[in-house]
Image 1 (tube, rainbow, N blue to C red):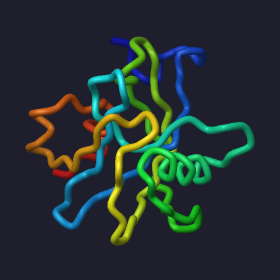
Image 2 (cartoon, helix red, strand yellow):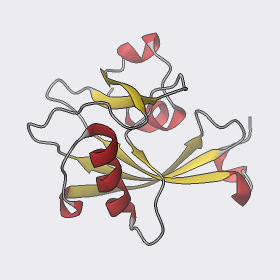
Image 3 (tube, one colour):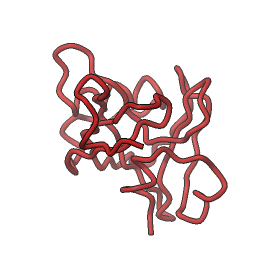
Length: 137
């Protein structure tokens, strides 16, 4: 397997991703239709969007969550192997997001969502970005 830092520029996918944790410390993960791996909510930017704007739009489209761009806390840029595109690396601008009392609902291309703890991760396929950096200890 190619390390994320050694992948050629053409094999990189740029996304914005959310770290959303519930009161029990579980991480919200989603599975897109036609895929097997659970990953953090988020997605690819549209032309002219900032990473935070991308995330806010994706959270609304995919999970019905209303979050202001000013309410997302940047955690940094992270890299990992792509879960659904062999040979590609995901470069993610990752943000901590507090969704308050909202309940996420799978919509658009999201087939399923799950709140996942570290122990739950052994029972589902988790994308490398979430598994390597963000699953709770």
